[in-house]
Length: 412
Image 1: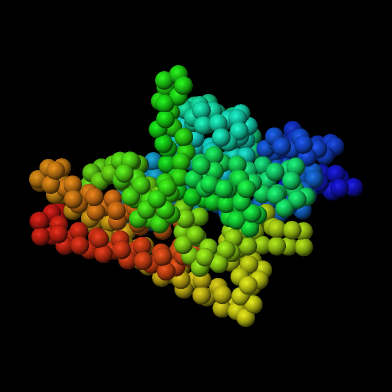
Image 2: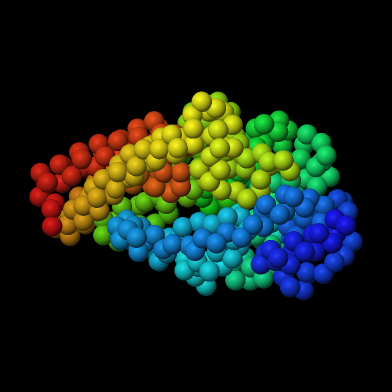
């Protein structure tokens, strides 16, 4: 009976399952699922969870460069000047990375690390095998992507052999395991955020030398000094890491990428140990919803589960007010950054690169702060006070820089 119901479900929601797989067959054993990336196979045993996971996300990715032309100016010199689309759910992660205009013929396979549940199978080694990880990362994206046959899915966060125990969650990404001592044996309460944080966090490509002498790289998190933006900048400064050089100002810049975990950890929910799943995968009669969404999508069961005296309308208004305030600060700092890049470029043109070094250092520090919030996707809600502090600090740095450049006669 369960298999027939799943067959109907797979046909009706089958946009995530290749047509050749949409046939009835005996459910796989849990032992077999240990290496199965396809979420539909897991759905044969965990039907309610798969049903919520497979709910179609009808959102069409928006090109944010079209919505805000300043972004192309700020990311000039990086792949993000070509495209910066809004994100969709886990089930579309692989499809969307395949379609991004940021890909080039030289793009490395490490871009699949957090886009496919096939990742561990392609690497073909346990998470502590850094050499195998480096070998994978050294391959070209175009050579590897055909081996990825599933988006972000069940295997990324779950151990099929422990699904009836308190150890059903597990971290599978090596970089997070290296950056978070104790993650393997962490309690499930912590893992409810760790499994999200393993991908929803800032990372960089650490250069390594492979056993045969080839140059490669592996994914790492820059949080050895701490998770605050100042700690991350200090880490990158210490290893002289930059992601791109701005063609106008010449500033060696950092491109922050989805640091939700870091910002959440500095906010009131992180301090109170309210996990990612509490708000983005709320409890239902059939267990946690796997239709990962903004907390406001089901605010009665997300916010309402703790804030019982606050009605949904008031909660939405409070969240909107926080985000509107952060949006205003982001926009103001973006204006300052655009002007500062232009003025620093004018200074370079008039007096040479050496005269612009101090301005470039300030631009690096200020844009990293702005990007930490701009790229984080909660519009500051994960940590309102910290987001405000970071953006106000960026605004102060840029105000001082623009005043200095004006005195130097650096205006175009």
